[in-house]
Length: 357
Image (cartoon, rainbow, N blue to C red; front, top):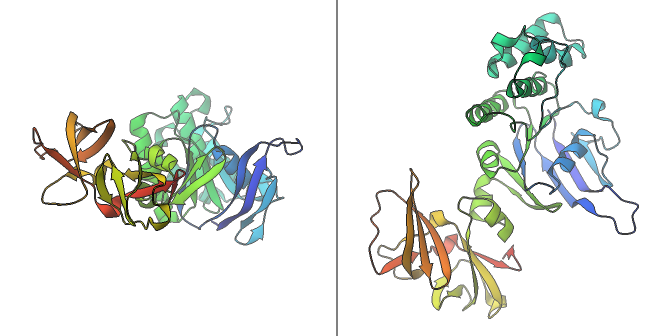
């Protein structure tokens, strides 16, 4: 396992073009040893390019990559001690499941006893015990992907395990169990895991830290809690969370307040430099509640729809042309008229030019 530093990395697939297009714009970050990371974003945003730069499949147009402070930018993949799992199964069809799992260890001259120990341990984790002597080519697509995943996990000495949407071909129930198993492996062996996905639920439930990308930019990196409560951009607010963050076009009213349809809403943001400028107020549906005894930060709304979603109710309210979403407990009684919603000042995010102030 290694600490991985990405220093001012950028990449273009046509660097010699007079106007090169960058798949990755310049960024720097550190992946700490033994942590779980998710690279999250829509298709084509640069997630796989970032992963391939770390593994050595792609050399960056600029910047450097350090493993434990050693520059590996020009090292080939086989010299980086990285395990990589791709979106679709990559297996040796002429080998058994056991031989597939053992192959990375045999290539590094591990003893037979150690190989047997590690293969059986990984097979147990992935529920492949009963298939060890079976030809790999006869397995289903999701079982073959488990073999690919197992080959990435079988070595304990790798700098990191890089996974590019590895659970795409696996059924939903098994996906959940495998994410839990991966977390257990990380916690037990302190293996650095980097997981590429376009699924925010996978990222939020798997990772210690999430890197959100859009159009080649790293728009925010932080813990799931940080990304959920204080999105750096309206894109992150929209992309993470279900439903997406409530966003209202508004303008500053005083040094810490905005106006929404004529109602004054206080925030915890200093707006002295923004008075009368057009801005946006963002707040998660989880933080908007039916008013109880609160006297300020209230919106008078009409109830449009109430959906029972099992663990909670999703309330859709209207205030003029605005639509407001609020998650409330199933036990909460909703009044038939004179409904007021409370927006806590400390949970309000203010955005100028789509960026958090």
